[in-house]
Length: 209
Ligand SMILES: [Zn+2]
Image (tube, rainbow, N blue to C red; front, side, top):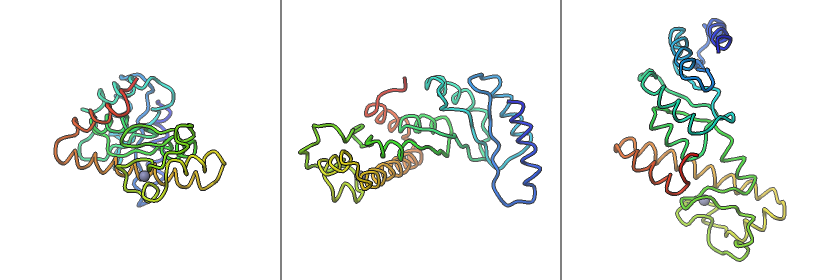
């Protein structure tokens, strides 16, 4: 953690003349005291945004959310907060409840290529035999072009045949789902209904375990 803080200082110095928004990255693994020290250090160096790194690397999910709750009151309110490498729909909404604004993650695209598709009724594993003759769209609640034009049976066929179009269509749908998820989260924040939305997502996808 201390080495990362030294790097942060050197990076800030090196980029002094740049117009890039360089975010400081908080480290400290699963130790709340190290996370707090690291956040204090990042704030004292002074960055336009705060990133939380070293999460979602194999530690228990519940522990990550506990650490986020612990840090949430210390995050500077006037700056954007970025949680690196997270996550599932439930992880994202719970993190937003703890003040996180930004995310990046491979899940929607990597899972899409593996036939693991997000819907507003839960996950669909498109290779399953029960979709063989299923003419319904992936997700009736989804407005994406894939759900408008193609059936589960066709998407299953493409996946099982190893067609590259399978990866393309599945990725399109999953990214559309994630964009819609973030839109719903922003709307819920505006209306003060974030807790309701997080309960709905936990109903659909199950609690963090
Ligand atoms: Zn769709």
